[in-house]
Structures are given as C-alpha cells and as structure tokens.
Amino acid sequence: MYLFSLLYICLNFGIAGEFGGSCNLRFDDTNPTKEDVEYVEAIKADVRWLGFDWSELRHASDYFETFYLCAEKLIGDGCAFVCDLTADQVREYRGTLTEPGRNSPYRERSARENIDLFRRMRAGEFADGAKTVRVKIDMASGNINLRDPAIYRIRHVAHQNTGDAWCIYPMYDYAHCISDAVEGITHSLCTLEFEDHRPLYDWCLQQIDLPNHPELLRPLIDAGLKTPVSTPRQIEFARGNLDYSVMSKRKLMELVATGLVDGWDDPRMPTLSGVRRRGFPPTAIRAFWERAGVTKQNSTIEFSVLEGCVREVLDASAPRRFAVLDPLKLVITNLPEDHAETLTFPNHPKNETFGTRTVPFARELWIEREDFMEVPPKGFHRLVPDGEVRLRGVGIVKCTEVVKDTSGNVNEVRCTLDADTRHGMPGADRKVKGTIHWVSTRHAVAAEIRLYDRLFDVADPDDDSGGKTYRDHLNPHSRRVVRGFVEPALGEVVPGMACQFERIGYFVADSHDHASGRPVFNRTVTLRDSWAKATGK
Image 1: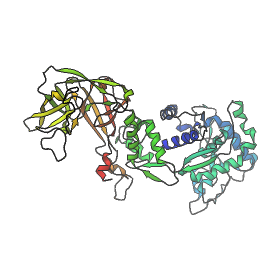
Image 2: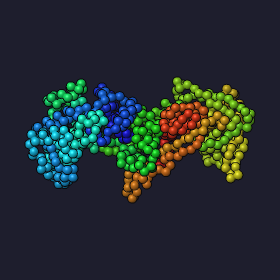
Image 3: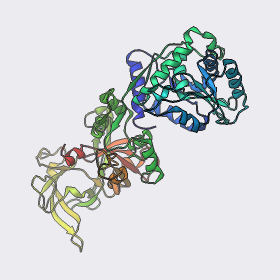
Image 4: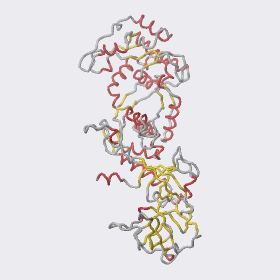
C-alpha cells in the first residue's frame, strides 16, 4: 500500500468516526487476474495497524449476482447492448478529445437479442474479448467516459472468492456505484482522478434505481447480507503529494525492479511497508494526514511535516537508550582497570511511568568521535585537550592526554574523573557547558546501524526541465550503514521496538534482520530537522 493511499483510509475512517457513522472495508475484486489473497490479508493488517476497524468486511464479488441482474435490467430497458467490437475497434470508434465518437454497429440490437447474448456470455459460449456489454449514453459527449462505456467483459479465469462460477466480470466503474448503493453508503470519497467518472456513477444509479427495484437484491437477501440501500454521493478530493518523493506507482515499481532500492519495504520508500519498517508510528501517520487536510487543489506537502509528526509521537512514547555510532575510546586513568559499577537512568526524562534501567559503567568507554576535537571551532562545548565535559550520569572528566596512531589519527583520549562531581557528592552541581553520552567498552553490544534519509536530494524529483529524470536525483547518502555500539539493554529487544538514541535520533529494531545478540537498528528520524538547516528554510 502506498503512503498517499493512507490519506484515503484515514479520511474515510476519520469522517465516519467524527460523525458517528460506520465505515466498511470493501475489496473491489472485479478483476480476477489481479486479485491475491496475500494482498488482501496485507491490506487488512495495514488498516488495523493504522488503528482502524471496519464495520463490515465486504467484497464486490459478494454482489456478482446483483450486478448481473442490474445489467439485465439495463439491457431490458434499452439502456445497454452486447457489442462485438474488438478492443482496438472500440478505441477507433470512441473518437478523441476534439472529435466525437461513432455508434457501434451493434448498438441497435433488440433487447431480446441482447439478453440472449448476455446469457450466453455468462454460460461461457464466447472467448475472452469476443464480446462486451456496453451502456448507451452519448458517443458525442465531451466526457469520453460517457461514450458508451463497457460494464461487462469476458474472462475465463477463476476468481479467488467465486471460483469458476463466473466467466464474465463487471467493470470497476459499474460495480463501484452499485456496491455503494447496496451497502447503504452515503458518501463515497475518492481522489480527483475519478471526478470525470462521477457522471457515469450517477447515470448507472439513476437508470438501475435500486431503491425501487428490490427484486434485484433478492440474491443478497437470500445470502443473508444486509442491504440498507441508498443513493450515494461521490465526492472527490486531491491526492496528497510529498516533496522529496515520487508518488507514481510506475516509478516506484522501476526503483524496485532495477534494484535502486531494497524492495517495497525499503525504509526509504513511500509505502506503508517501508515507513513501518523505518519505524513511523501509526499515530504519527494519522496526525500527518489530519494536518494535511482535504482540498480540491493538488498540492505538495513538505516531508518535514511528516517527520515533525513522527518526532512528536516518538518524543512522548520512545524510551531512551545510549548508543555510539562513530566510536572513540575514552579511558578514565584515575579509576582502577577492573573498575565496574552499575548506574541507574530513567527510561524517559518526562514520564516516570516508564521506570528506570541500569547501565554498566567501567574505566574504558566509547564516546562519539565528534564529541572530541583537538582544535575546536568557536562555540564547541564538548571535550577538548585540557578541557572538561560531563559524562552523562557519571560526573565531570578532564582530558589529560590524546593518543594517536602513526598516521596522526586520534585513537584514544585519556581523562581523569573528578570524584567530587559524582552523584551525591558536594561538587555534583558544578557546572560545565557540555554533557556527552557513552557506553562501556567492556559491556557494549556491537550493532549494525542503518542511517536512512530522504530518497531524493531535491524537493521535486519529477521536475525534468533540466533534462534529468527522477533517477538522476537519487540521494547517494539516503542509506548509510555503520558499525556502532549500544548499551546492553538494546542487545535483546524485539524487532519493531522503537527508542531514542540519546543526542542522536530515533531508531527502531529492524523487523527483518534484527535478532537477539545481533542487533540491527534503522534510523527513523533525526532529533531535529537537519534538512531545514541545510536548505536554509
């Protein structure tokens, strides 16, 4: 499921909840060649993951007999006919946007002949594509959707729900409006691409007139299905687009097929499986679409708005942990070599109900390499030669020596700990400007950490005005893998567990590759919007 599809789900369930209504989950399984049970189950799981539950689970195939009876009514009323034109001939007869179409030579068949042919289509007498059922509207209409569109075609293919019971299947536009009416749907919400289809939606409902023809519902009543029946209203809204993304299904398929991403669930992909694997909480996605709102105007929403929603949710819900992504060894020389103790830290600084955890502390620690600089710029408040910094939860240390390798790279910094600044001691409140985190080298767990970022490096990768394609705008730094160290508590977490690596960002244990003793974490989002700073926004 694509990320922009979530607007549709959130909108439908959200409006139903807001006004005390109900929302069904219906699968429009009118094309047996494109249906897959695994796909259906995945959508059901996705809807539940988003926090929604449906009033009733329905399928368009539940109504196949009613669709058929409605088509017979249209034929009997002289509003539909069986057409023998091939697909190429239909396109030729349809005309263009500037030229009217021509009537099919089979348009004036008698109702009796059309009913006979339609029943023989159902009986399987004709090959795929040999005949279609088309409704009679207006071949000169400016809306090409109204130029005698097909409502039935022949497909000798088994259906996942009905098996081999049918070899003719209804077209989506025809089945959609009848399904809505049968279920008592009052408002059928869809994206703007269906705006030109609304006249056909309304025409079918008007001609069939289900409320006044209960005999068409007999198969459903006999099957025990509720049939409240309504005259639904189709309402269109603009699809939500994100910057730094492509939303075209074709382009996303190309990214997967060519190996430019690691599948549909790659954490950089604007798919539900991708953002789930990246660690985006469902409440954040719902909040994002609520803020985006609904409009008739196509617009592009900033990716930073989505990231902001994710940060808000994770700030309140994610426990804190220590991790070092680019390790530099720090040795506290005035502690014994075998020194070891356990320190207690809150799991969340703003919520005591999260409880506490213990973290082992020893003489040798890993710190972030960027937390030490030999020649610091102005305003640098972390560790420097002869400078002091507070080790989170420990006390103040002073850098006394810098150890380098033969190439001049810093291998290790040596410090002394001011014991008087430890918790409970008289100097515990002594102020220094910087505080850094750490993990014990003796107890730390090695981890693979995947640093994900935006898939494209420009806001509008679809802009080909400069002769480039969206593939030319792929961000080469959108996925970077490092080997770091995490505190022991992170070595045994379950896949999908989210946390904040203090001072670094929000991460999630990968749903595929993470395992006990072999942790793999994906960066969900940074602590702050680094793109805004980089682009000057």
